[in-house]
Image (tube, rainbow, N blue to C red):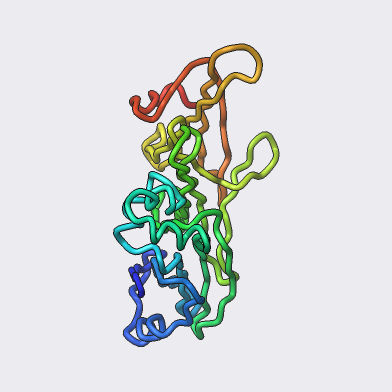
Length: 250
């Protein structure tokens, strides 16, 4: 079973018919199906591919039910389909797998992700010189408000997939965004309206004393990378509330 989607990444050109044929003939790891396939066209370099694989046993219907609910198919299937639930109990779902393929089809970079379901999306953020790829891994557990989607900002290069970093207090950290019951993010125009930046809000219990603390982070383009600005204040926020006002972010 193959679930396939093909996209052009970097906004430069679509794949040729020959490249599409090679993609159809790619080697699929045992137990997996193709979930998404991006063609990467970089100036001065041959066309490469990024392929996302997911467990072949997770069909479209099961995936749609799992996404945003639970990364464990047993959570969904125990009541609906005990037989399939037993299969996943004996053989747990495979983690989603990301591969970067050379034009010849050789695997130049590979990483197993944290959970069975993931999604890739291209984003052209004004101010960033090249489009980036947003890789979202679904970490929902079915219970709790601190589990959810984790999105990493990646840039495809000739060497493979490289995560973007943001400088915070002098140290570089991977630019990872979260959407949970108590966290969310959005891309917004900069205050001068010439570019775009990312706002992230998170709410956690206070380290000392009762109550909660809200953290406001702005990821701002700085040269070829990002810088992170952060501030905190006492307060409580959940994702069913309106996104905090722009002036609360640094």
